[in-house]
Length: 183
Image (tube, rainbow, N blue to C red; front, top):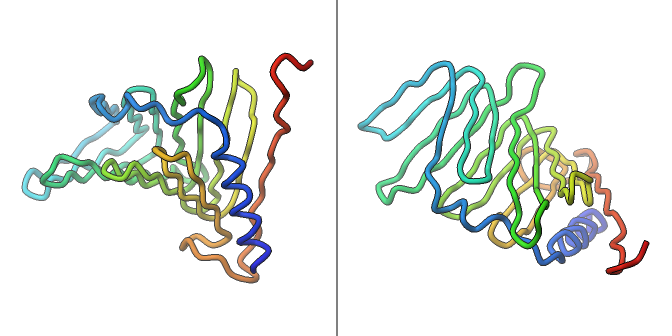
């Protein structure tokens, strides 16, 4: 268990080492949603979207079969996306610091907290960083927490966010970084 925790911490340190961060301008953009159906409860400030849901906000793009959006009195939004049967909910976001750098992920359920800018991926969770369309780093586990402000990942082997023996294994692929100008 200590070895797994150590591996996750090393991975997080490696993944956060790059200078690029999530696109900061996204937090000031409006949220746009397309779906087959919407139900809105004005008293509870809850929107429920169903059927081929696509959310965009700046460079953020999220897809799912069903999405619930709650808004607090301060105007912050809390999004939960549910995968279609036998599929996965997805997200993709451009990163600051380069022309073509992205972060993308998928899971059976994705939660995004607009206030803290933390994305949580539950069950069959995967995330990867892309540069010019090529994957640079990848992580897989049953639960991934991703702080979009700090570019900090936590990967666990159970869907409740804990790590325990017999709970499965996390996986990571970390590509070597080439020196500038090296071929």
